[in-house]
Amino acid sequence: MAAQFSNPTTPGRRIKLNVGGKFFETTLSTLQSAGPDSLLAALSNRAAYNPIFIDRDPEIFSVLLSLLRSNRLPSAALRRFSIQELAEEALYYGAESRLRSASLPSPLHGIDAAIVDTIRPASDAVPSTFSAGEDGSLWIAHGGQISIYDSYLSYSTAVRTHLDDITSICRVWPEIAAVGSESSSGLHIYDLSSGRYTGSVYWTDQDDPRIYKARVCAIANSPDSVFVSFDCPHRENSVLVIDKSTLQVSSELTRQSGSAAKNTVPGKVTWLPETGLVIGSAVTCGAFGYSGYIRIWDPRRKEVVWETNEPGSGRSSRFGDSFADVGVDIDDSVLFKICSKSGDLAMADIRKLGDDPWVYMEDTNPSMREASYGGNEVHLHCYKRQVFVGKDGGLEVWSRLNERGGWSERRGDSENGRDEVSLKRNYVDKVEMGERGLIKRIEGGGERLFVSRENVEGIEVWESSNHSAIISVSS
Figure (tube, rainbow, N blue to C red):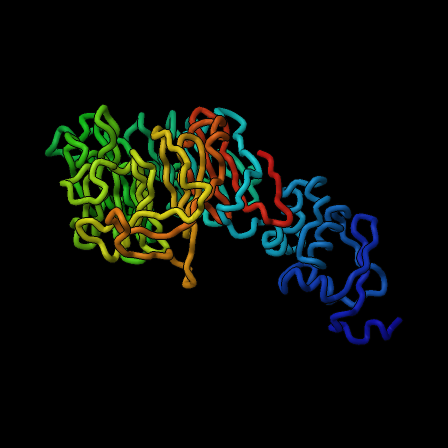
């Protein structure tokens, strides 16, 4: 027996544990795989003749031990225990990183994505907006509350704000939210870890009486600044740069009268990490169809470096087919737009912008070429070098990557005289399945895609269907 413990660092050395009255036998290497700073690694270094006693749930420990042995969760475990229960025990043992890597979704590919759950807050369940985190966590705004779900999509808590409703939300730090409302003025900052209100920023001008009760329309975040578009009751609007360290306005990128489509408030604002540029877009729809603009500012020089208006001057190869929505691929610095009449998708390299930089997608999927488009609700979102488009309740994805991981571009004159790019389009959610409701917002986070629909409770969670152990989470 003594020989068994003569070399306590032997990876194959057997170790006996007594967890909650149930006995387990495993190896040194299995326990140490939880991590060098874990409780299990510390216990594995103890040379004991009798089983080491741990006063915890033996059934959940059995699941975690299986995880350490195989690097995957047994499918039966997900039916017996919630992710929250597993996460709490994994945290106690110091094996949370192993649980996270085994339970989070595989890489998101829109072609094989499927709904795995719908997250529904307990009250006021029709979301007004939401924010997805880089780790796949989710913040859902409903009424004046923000319900918080962690990276396992387990419910954490809810924070009540002083607002009656929240229509804009942005993560300015991992636990700090910037929120705005169409019914109340100002941008408001909340620490969601403590539920504490930390301050507000307002757009005011003592020399201009038209600037009052300015409401937030869109928010974008950068490491040092927050970029916010504000809109006043008489349609005057602006994009402000707010210093994150002081919560003070540091500059004004633009101020517009809002009297025409080309100077309405930006409904989308995006910060581009590669260049530090800020991209704003606005779309309006009236009796004569869609119109709007895309404008790019350099915050350092406080000037516009490029803009386009649609309908334009006629230089565009798609004159009369104005865009209905705009998205930005921040990974590759590419602009995308979806045409309002044809439903076609076009892209433009932000580094090579000119009078008419648009290159139109050539669909390489024969089954999609005759796909109909109702022309009502259109929403576009770029995520992980894929373009997700919601049309009339249906969801489709454009995704063809070249060997370098960027967009595969082929320029050249086609028979109709326009440049095209060959990408593949596929249904994620077929149009006939759009009876669930019109899509209102699409956002990616972690390896998930989140979708909200008009007047529908909850947020849909989409994950790639090739994940060997997809977790069906509950709210």
